[in-house]
Image (cartoon, rainbow, N blue to C red):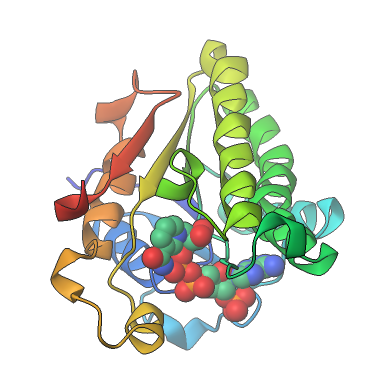
Length: 232
Ligand SMILES: NC(=O)c1ccc[n+]([C@@H]2O[C@H](COP(=O)([O-])OP(=O)(O)OC[C@H]3O[C@@H](n4cnc5c(N)ncnc54)[C@H](OP(=O)(O)O)[C@@H]3O)[C@@H](O)[C@H]2O)c1
């Protein structure tokens, strides 16, 4: 018996640097996985319990359409792991342009708002559900020159805390993981001289996401969990 046998997980950002680990981990744990991203393909995860659901989360309507497709195909959504997000930095607040601010809010806050509004009613109706979102260390420890990113991730944490409180009466948990810099191919390419040993292993974040999505974590909600490794 695996922890997510007979469960359906909707994973957004499923083919990203972290999403690849999370998707593989959830499939190995017995879940059926609907993997969402704009470019995702069935061949990305050759597993009979994987369904590629190409699409985007930039509007309420688009997110609703995705959730409807997943619910029609699997009949239920037990778990939402929301990994879509993005980074921008390099300028002080006074020189950050509107496009950067909007992009950070779209990727890190609005995408979550849109998919949460589509999924929460299904979970409430079912009387159970697990929601995990990925914030960032910067949400609680802002640094110079990444204000739009930090603020958008802080807003995500606030949103998830609200979701946890609003849905604790219906067996729906909502938790946020705050990773430090993860050891992903994109980060290695962007910073080839960094000490990769200090970075967070995405598998550890995937393992924590799995545990938060399991029956074992039914009383864990509203948590904001740092994963900082040796860089604590
Ligand atoms: N990497 C790090 O060191 C780090 C540290 C702290 C927190 N985080 C957070 O962890 C999460 C995952 O990071 P990552 O490094 O795995 O990111 P990533 O490699 O850039 O993956 C992002 C994923 O989201 C999808 N995506 C982007 N915009 C989308 C949209 N509008 N609609 C649907 N899908 C969209 C992308 O696929 P498509 O291009 O196919 O759409 C991709 O699968 C993010 O929230 C990030 O902010 C990352």
